[in-house]
Image (tube, rainbow, N blue to C red; front, top):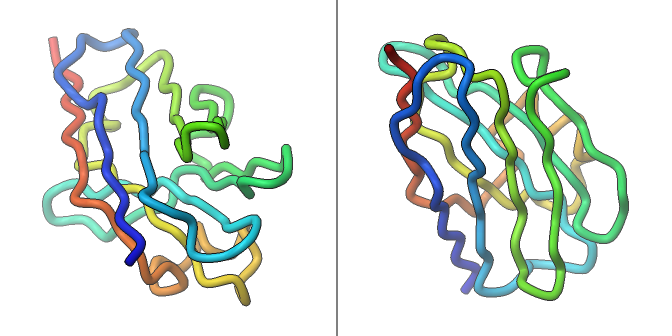
Amino acid sequence: QVQLAESGGGSVQPGGSLRLSCVASEYPNTNPCIAWFRQAPGKEREGVASIYTGLDSAYYGASARGRFIISRDNTKNTVYLQMNNLKPEDTAMYYCAAASPQYACPLVLLNPDYAPYWGQGTQVTVSS
């Protein structure tokens, strides 16, 4: 049973940084795509960034490009999301998810249904 656990959320002022972690109990397949999503109250779930655990290829949603960096440490079964220059509109619950292998990692950001495994989420609040 694949289990994902997010951590690292919190409250930060605009312009600040946070690093989120997603630890997997195991990966569902070889070289899975792990993605970060976020969901703000009243809004749809949005793809933030995704990465293949076995490659250096990373993909970003429009809101994350240039400010967020996704990375992985396979020795720890962990994927990170470094978030810089945070803005109030980044306030949301952040989730990590492991995608089904038949879907390309960039496409997973566009459709959360492509990921059958989800963590419980970690809250990020950006306010002054």
